[in-house]
Image (cartoon, one colour):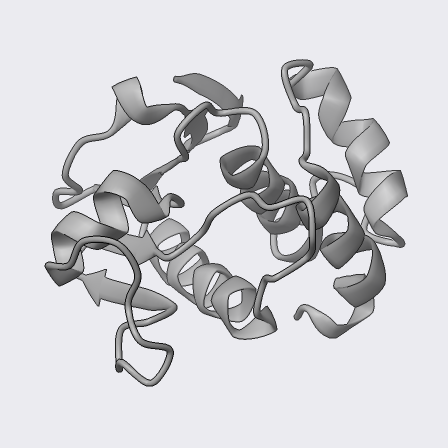
Length: 157
């Protein structure tokens, strides 16, 4: 787990833990976190009410994988930003983790730093990425998430 900004941490699956008062966790991985929290194996039908996410007190479970094709839904990123903004605004420390800590979780942290905290440039994904790499050099966005964020940057608010 690496602190990328005051009260904002990025980690991998080893960092995974349950959120608690004052410590909120964004689990940005389908397996095992989203699957375990919703209670399914394999794939979940897209019409399921928790298909994209499940929110619990101090925990947000995102159905995120890191494919080479951008299969992401903008609603997942908007939900993340809302959850993170509320938790952070209430004084909680945030942990955003994914399986490897290289793509999904740091992409969400980058988004939060740019769009909500204004701690890095927010003009474009490329601009934010360059600034984010100075605080998190292990950032290796997958092709799909990089394409998605580049294309949808202005729409994610």
